[in-house]
Image (cartoon, rainbow, N blue to C red; front, side, top):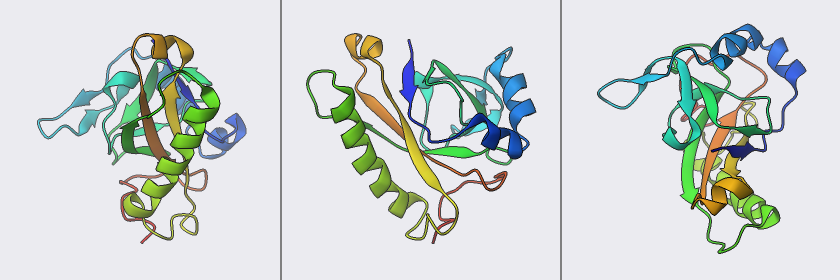
Length: 162
């Protein structure tokens, strides 16, 4: 099952960050990401989009539709972090309505998770949302994330825009 990503980024931006090779190696998903006892990712690898937790760090996928992401410990080079999860309130699949709810909710979360100066700190936001297929299987969850194209992150984005 897959989710749609509406990340506003280009493959060239990823290559400019020097993360293209890392993404290529993780995109093979020969290994799965592992979590420690505290729930944090302790070793990188593929992570099913339905197993995402707030605080998970990852490489933003270039594909419009994904079933796995390249998840990493936040201490390793990455460009994004999940900041929130919520279920949309609509009752039937409508991409426009999902996008409207996601945009409003995910932007509001940026102020509390990253900080009130998140834009000045070089961050943007996007989300993973249900596809029509996953909606038919009961998926209503939107996963918000903060990302940057300016730097290779090696820590959590939480509080970086304070």
